[in-house]
Image (cartoon, rainbow, N blue to C red; front, side):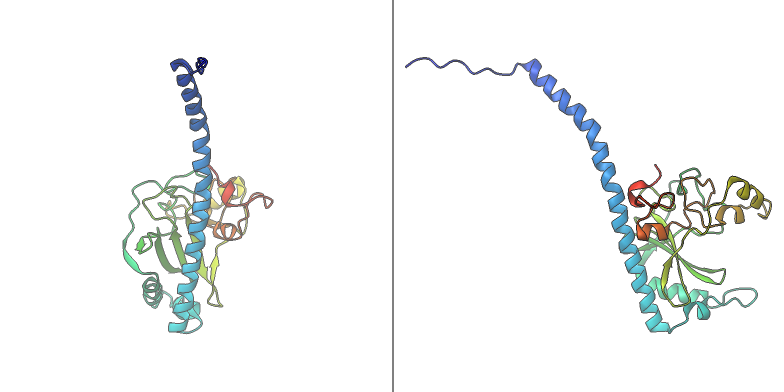
Length: 247
C-alpha cells in the first residue's frame, strides 16, 4: 500500500500563540458580557420589589381600611402617634427576618458622594426581608414612605437609584414611585445651603428629589424610582434607564 503523507500538526509555539489570543479576547469581552447582565439583574429585582411592595400595601388596606395616609400619617403637633402601627403592618406583610447592616459606603445616583444618608433626614433600609431585600418604612412630612434596597445591604452597587429606591403611599392608597420634580442648578443648590440648619445638609441635598447624572446633590437618586419603573433615562428620554446607569 502506498504510504499516506503525514498530516501537518500545530507546533507548540502555534498552540501557545492561539491560546494567548483567546485569552486576550476573553479578557476583553468577559467584562462587557458580565457588565451587560448586571443592569438586567437589577431591573428584574426592582420589578420584583415593586410588585411585592404594591401587594403588601393592598393587603394592608384590606386589613386596616382605606385612607392610610389620613389614618397613619396625621401629625398631632409633636409626633405621628399612629406611625408604628402602619410600619408594623407593612413589615408583617413583607416577612421581616432580621436587620440589614451596611458595611460599605452608600453612594448617590451619580456616584459623586459617599454616605448620602449621613447628613440627610433619610433612613437606611434596615429591615432584612426573607427574599434578601432590605426595607424601611417611615412616617414623616405627612407621608408614608418606603425605602427598599432591592439586592440587600451586602451587595453592590449600594447606590441611590441603582439598587436603593424610594416610594410613598398616595391618597388613593396606592404605592407610588418618587420622581424628580426639578433638576436644580449648582447656583440653586448653593442658595439652598443657606437654609440648611445645624450644619446638616437636608434642604439643599433633597430639594427637587434629584435623579440625574448631572446632579452633585448628596441626595441625588431620591427621585429615581419613577424612571426605573418606566425604564426611561432621566437625562435623555430617548434611552433606557437600566442600560444607562452612571458608572
